[in-house]
Image 1 (cartoon, rainbow, N blue to C red):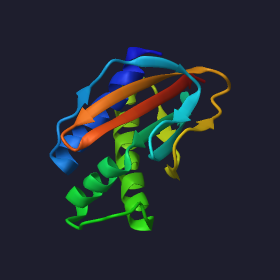
Image 2 (cartoon, helix red, strand yellow):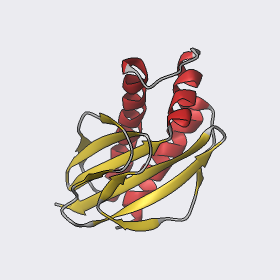
Image 3 (cartoon, rainbow, N blue to C red):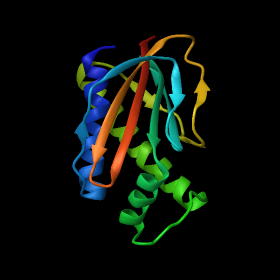
Image 4 (cartoon, rainbow, N blue to C red):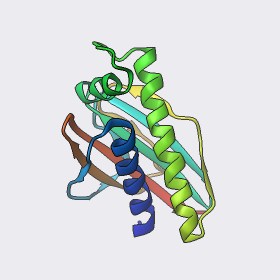
Length: 153
């Protein structure tokens, strides 16, 4: 996994969390894992197409996801419903859009597919038995993961 892939998505995540949620994001130790696993309760999957192809999986504990949407909407929310799912999908969409824009500085032209929200833990997803990179991230409202699986076309 090339550093520019990781830096593009990590940088976009930092920017969006700072601008939309007024939250700093701290990176933990990167881990290489087999495939992609939804290790948190609420997950958002983005597909990447173009010069790079693959998937980005954002994983949040329900508490963290609800706090994010509370900050954005000003509403107290108690469950992951359609409104919360839509808001989380939009955050992932913005991060993905910013990341693929960042990738153009490395001469990669990519696009993202619409986000899919997956609620539930430990559902394995196929990554063609390839390894992906797990980036654990920490904010003041909780921890979350960004799982990156990208290959050059």
